[in-house]
Length: 244
Ligand code: NAP
View 1 (cartoon, rainbow, N blue to C red):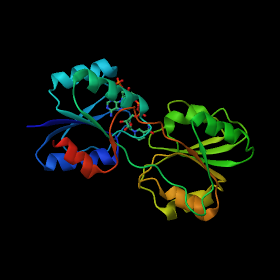
View 2 (view 1 turned 60 degrees about the vertical axis):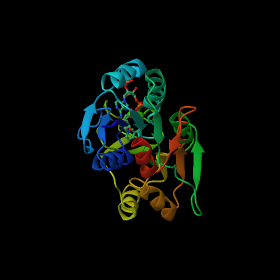
View 3 (view 1 turned 45 degrees about the horizontal axis):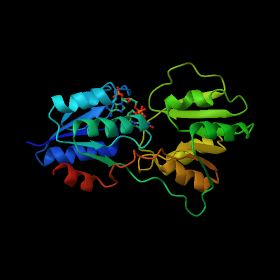
View 4 (view 1 turned 180 degrees about the horizontal axis):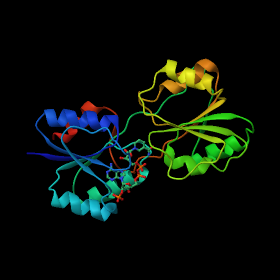
């Protein structure tokens, strides 16, 4: 039986696991193990890092893996780089399954920035603004030094460290609705949205709400995928590839 490793942590990874398992492929999904109560895919699941590219290459050999699909989040750049290196070393084919980024449309007012640090620098020029920050709990330290703005920081799990008085943490997990996002923006009188270009449907509602309410958006661009690796954006294409 063909043995496939899915590097997961995304809705696409769960959909792929379901499709492969349903088609009779042995599939093991790997999660980083950071979220307290993760949504689990069907099939075998392992949790925690591999110990860098060497650790992953050894694991692939020990588990006799035939193919790897990197279906991690578009911002999980270290895991993607590690997978690219490890699969070359282990001689195992790799495919990256990555959802498309969001596109700006009529009525949007986005500023694209290359990094979280640049997003924070833009906010430093907006004293007094009330910010809707949706870049994830591990990015919080980049923003908590900004004393001139008020931040509503939404994340799945609580931050690792206490936050200053100008930061209000909201624990929640998508999918979100446009109506819900609109209410949240109104309730907290938010002036600007900061988000990573994660793409996908689960968290896109905030962009529609921002458009409707005239909020500017600071959009952090995603890192490039590792060079020389084939990238697809459809689960069905990844499933066909993985089945050989
Ligand atoms: P990252 O910075 O690229 O990865 C850091 C290290 O965590 C990796 O070197 C690896 O450790 C381990 N790791 C990451 N993903 C793993 C996986 N699927 N299975 C086993 N080990 C993994 O990753 P991240 O941005 O922290 O993301 C961690 C996980 O959360 C990923 O699975 C990703 O799909 C999911 N996620 C991330 C975001 C985001 O915004 N970054 C959002 C939603 C979900 P070793 O080097 O020891 O192997």
